[in-house]
Length: 325
Image: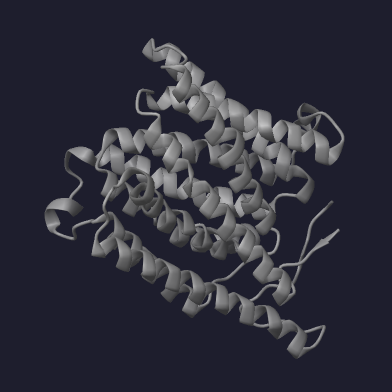
C-alpha cells in the first residue's frame, strides 16, 4: 500500500486538527493528577495504565475484529519502537519530576521538537525547512518563558540535579522518538501498539510498587481518577494523535503536540484557582504562533507537488514512502 508523505492540503489540515485536539484532550489529565493528591506517582501510573490498556483493548477488538493480544503479536518494528518510547516517556517524566526542579524539567522536555527534527531525516526521510527551524526556536522560547526558567549561570550549571536533567532529556528524546515511530508504523498497528504501551506501563508500575513496598492503591477516589485519566483522557488523546500522524510530518507532529503545554495552565487556573503570570500568557502565545507558522509552512509545501507536476517533487520534501500494508 502507498502511504503518501505529501498529503492533500485539506487532509493535512484535518490531520493538524486531530493532533491539536489530541493535545487539548491530553491537557485535561492535569485535573486528575492534581485531584489525586493522596497517591504516589507509581500508584497513579499503575491505575492509569490499567484504564488505558482496557479502553484501547476494547477499541482494537472492535475496529479490527480480532483479539488485541493477537494483534500485538503481529506488530511491526516501528510499532514496537513506539511502544517502548511511549513507556519510557511516561516513566522518565515521573523520575524527572521526582528528582528535580519542575520548571527546568519542562524546559528540557520541550527540546523534543529539535530532537524530532534531528531524527526525522534518518528515520523517515523527512526534512525541516528554515521557517520550521525558526518556529521550533520560537516554541522553545515560549515554553521556557511559561516555565519561568532563569537563564542565569546558577540555573544552567549541572550541580546536584544532574540526574533530573538526564531524566528530562530522556523524556524529550523518547517522546520525539514515539512521535516519529507512530508516523512510521503501519495504520493497522496503531491501536494494538497503544494497548501494549498501557500493559507495559502497568507492569513496570506494579514492579516499582513492590520494590518500594507501597500498596497498589491509596484510596478509591484516586484509583477512579487514575482509571478516568487512562481510560478516557489518555486513550482519546493518543488515538487522535495517532490518527493525525498519518498525514502530518514528524517534526510538525511534535510541534502541534505543544497544545497540551498551552492548555494545562488554563485548566489549573479555572478549576484550582492557580493564578498565572504574564510570562505564562506570553509564552503560550509564542507557542501558538510557532505552531501556526510551522503548520502553514507544511501546508504550503503540500501544494507544491501538484503545482510542479505529477513526476516532480520539491527539493525539501521526499517522494511518497512505500510501506507494506
